[in-house]
Length: 503
Ligand code: AHR
Image (tube, rainbow, N blue to C red; front, top):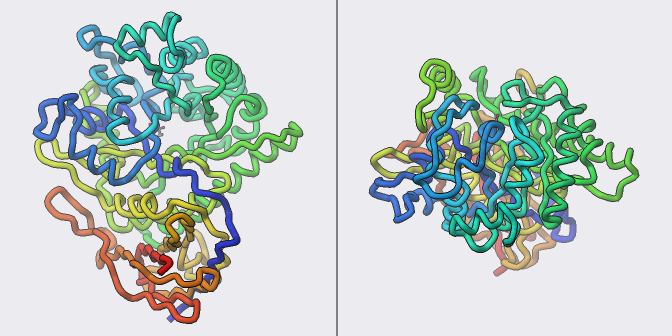
């Protein structure tokens, strides 16, 4: 059997895991809000109209930060429409997804919902069809205590204490031709510089995310990053990365090799940030906010059909990807890739959270259920808190059509000193062969295996549904520890969580 060998040493630390890498995203899109987190009249709805079944699943995922309200939606959003008494709120045409936005759920409702799931808001401002003034007004409404037009408006709306939102996105995917109010890199550079400057004058305690390229394949990547940061470097703290993958050619080996592209994407953005840092002779480091990542490809045809032929519906079923087992492997690979860069990736948002390219789905009349991708996210969020270890790995490879020779196993180790636990997350993306894992853990004296969680399905295309959870993790007992060496077998095409704890 092929063998992957690794050394785990508690003294060699990449960086602490910023818990915000387990963030997610709720956009006013499809059934994410209406019929997702909010559905008055549903048997599971609480007094605020929030679905309790969804709240329970989100709480289980332990998502510390949630990006809101978009996404593409934000680029034509008029935030004033979504606050204040419900009776005064009017519906609007929503142009990004060509839907009807009833505005019966807005910032106030979202903040209350976030309190229910113990999450902070990551708020985006509209730099598409609006600009500096509206961003400042919104920030004043959210964070200023009282005595000004917008802080007093918030108080009139029954919210005495400021929302105190700490993390703000300066627009969304401003390079994209699909974006309302798309900008050139110079236009966005200047606008984000001036908006960032003004926002930090209102509240210097906030952190700002500059829009990076919409994805790695954009023609202006990575010049966009270098040029826009050149303008706004002094005012922003993070730059965003967005990337979705899919098995478009139905070649599963190549599909799972795409996490190597994500790796390269991260390296290139770090290089662009550090290039500008060097150019400016700056001491400040810009970190990465990977604030949209996931698999997204199953639902593209329905999306085109609804937005082009059946527009202006309230909460149509958009972007409802029904995920397979191999998608769960891909999500596991992406999460591992993010964790490996814990020194620079400080924020990441699984896009999205409910119904729209989501780990959690709801039935209109019945309950909520877990997609296949729910599990790798759950496991990393639950056991991947602590510090990421530098782990030298010697790994066998297999051939793929597009990516050439790629490593069979992609893994990361996280040490939680407080809990005296070290966990290895590993995907064997070799679809044919099992690989033996050998880990040298001599620096973790007295540690024993507490659990090995495995996800493996005979059919790569297996899916879950409300009625049946076909793809789910199991506990397996095949971890041996002897003389400081851990041995276990990573089955072909499998997700693995090996948990070790001090006796
Ligand atoms: O998450 C779905 C969409 O993907 C977002 O609205 C947009 O930012 C991205 O293109």
